[in-house]
Image 1 (cartoon, rainbow, N blue to C red):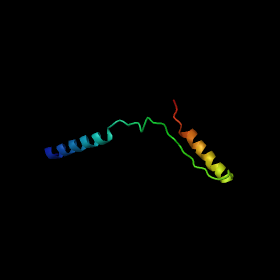
Image 2: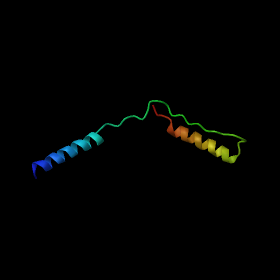
Image 3: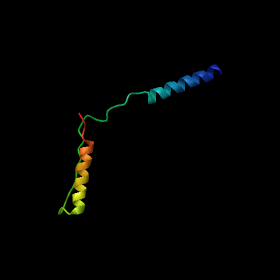
Image 4: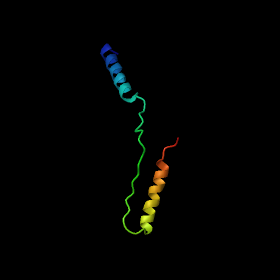
Length: 64
């Protein structure tokens, strides 16, 4: 291979490493807040909506 090809390969590898070689960053240190809006009487659909929101909050809570 020519010197030009090697330089191109080296530059490509350097670029890819700089883009994909970075360590993962934490999303945020602030807590997750889930807001459920409920209006009207608590009927079966509303009850399921609230239960689903609680399950989601329990699933997403941080583990220390």
